[in-house]
Image (tube, rainbow, N blue to C red; front, top):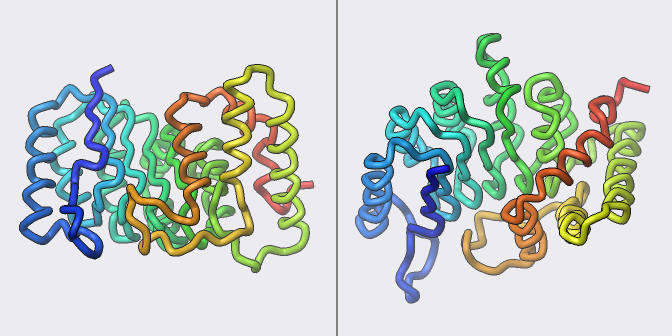
Amino acid sequence: MKKLNFRNAIKADPEFEGNPDLDSPEFKIQFVKVLEKLRLSPEVEDLSLKSNWIKAKQLNQLAEILSNHHELQDLDLSYNRLAPESVSAIKKIINEHPKLKIVYLDFNDLTDEFIAALIKGNSEEFNQRLRTVKISLSNNNFLTAKSIEDTRNKLTTRSRLTMLVGNQIKDDLDTEYREKIWAQDEQASNLGRSVSSPGQAIASEMIQAASAFFTPLKDASATSPNGKSSNQDKREGFEECKESGQNNLESDFSKSLKIQTMNPKNP
């Protein structure tokens, strides 16, 4: 698989204070160089743009470049600065890449507004396309019961699962639904203790550490994407699980929960 890794491609001088703004000359030049390299690699299948301070404007530029990259299967946009207005670019990328299997949007401080824009106002054809792509939304903010319920029939089972992990679930959940989510957490913990291989056991512990369903994350925008923070354990756990390829564990986790655990109306 042809891979391109632009992780932490946007770098600031050690004495630079504040967050890089990709509209400023210093950082805009760096981002343009990334786009140019990407333009020359239309055969790329696995693309990582993690931790590059990308906002909606830059994502729109990226989506235009990627229009000619028909082999794209894996796109990592985690640890950036995406916002609800970036959803149109995400939809464009999904729509134009039939081979796309997964998009990582973790640690972007996304909210319910983004979720609503992603799954509403679409053609039935596009909604069918959404069901074929795993969209990982773990460790964002303010995902409520409504946003979870709204995605129940719009995204794949594994997408709904990763949407829960590490997010802040507001207190507007009714008691029955809250108990079901707590049961999921316990079931995940039990699964972690019962896995057979050492690698899966390590990954399950990290998934468990990252699954603080009712614990709010601190403001992600106040932390450098490649810096340290009080949520470092969650971040490192997520990274280790993802990069060590423990997809089988997540698949087993998903199967064990079943779709009905996501729906408070089911018995």
